[in-house]
Length: 83
Image 1 (cartoon, rainbow, N blue to C red):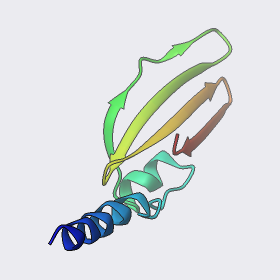
Image 2: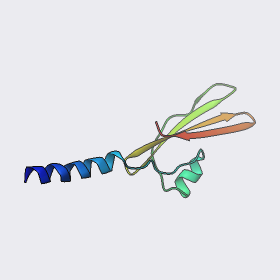
Image 3: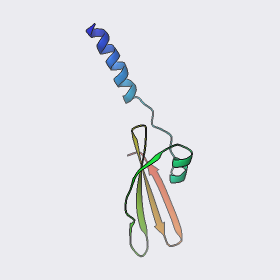
Image 4: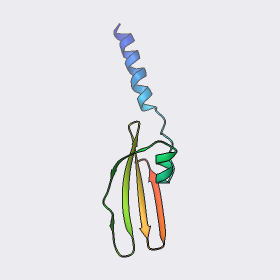
């Protein structure tokens, strides 16, 4: 009985550990629209005359995804990653 419980517990626990990383891209919009991520929080826009940075935290199925939005006078860069 105890042996069966241990085996069942191990299977359930190992399934969560071995869960594959969800799909994502470097684009905030793609992550929201195509991959189903949801916004969890957003930082205040922090910057100077030359640039500003905003960090958006997304979540999906217990995973966290950080997206950095970098604003420059004539350019915009974004990158998302799982920490």
